[in-house]
Amino acid sequence: MKPGIHPEYHAVVFRDQAANYAFLTRSTATSAQTVQWEDGKTYPVIDVEVSSASHPFYTGNSRVVDTAGRVERFNRRYQRPTSGD
Image: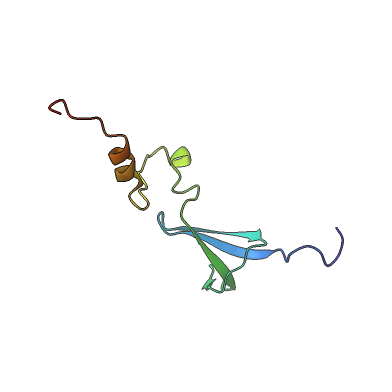
């Protein structure tokens, strides 16, 4: 690797709040928020919406994530006309 052209690679905690799950890994991502980990050290923490602990593919459970009324907007757009009209 050429020195000075790559971002810093350091330990980071990724936290999935939906599943109440966190894991420590290495990444170039950083955050101003920090958390004290099980080893007593403080690491930057990045909150994620989906991880292997909450993703339906890994858990086998399906869940509906409706952001900004997308389901309602889809239903309004493609609603079939009623038979009385």
